[in-house]
Length: 234
Image 1 (cartoon, rainbow, N blue to C red):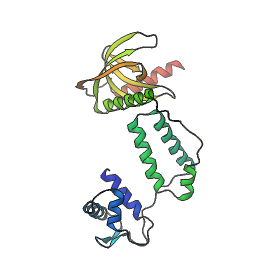
Image 2 (image 1 turned 180 degrees about the vertical axis):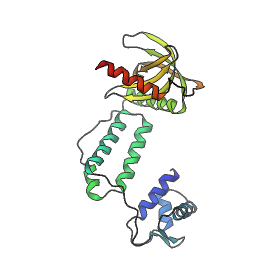
Image 3 (image 1 turned 120 degrees about the vertical axis):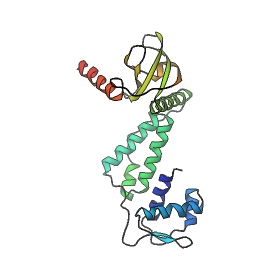
Image 4 (image 1 turned 90 degrees about the horizontal axis):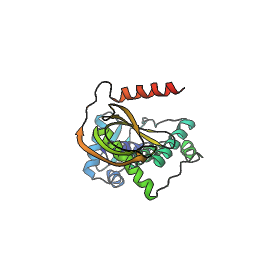
């Protein structure tokens, strides 16, 4: 568990309590040592969080003070729940796990009526985990990682009419079009921006080269080019 997550959970565990919470209970809940709990609580106190108590006694938030919970309207919360469901269904496993973990943290600090509302939304994105969808989710994760680390990719690609080609591309972004993903890139073969559908990539590998953002071939330029392209279709 990341340290930031531990600190969040410590504050949440203390919120609204009238009696001290023992450090041992926190350690068991978080799956860490007592020493880690003591250090985390001390750091929170130094940063201004109004925690009172000490080792061997327990901890509470100072009487009359509290850290206000995150507040959402019912519509905002429903949007978060629905968005999480869509990410879980259509994104890679990395983003899906992150979205679910974020929603758990949000719901942990919601008032009961909003927590109940979040479980009642009737917009779903069913998750199918057959062999093909698992492999596709792994590909989205791979592409996502290459975008973040700016790794040049070598692709063997088959277009919509079945023609094969080999490309070296600088991956810039992923876009989801309500059914299909596209990979936005700078294509070194065409010396221009090109979009590739991940489901048509026959083979993909990192070349080992890290590319640097350059004027007229970076993400901002790509997005501007796509806006111009779609404007021309209107």
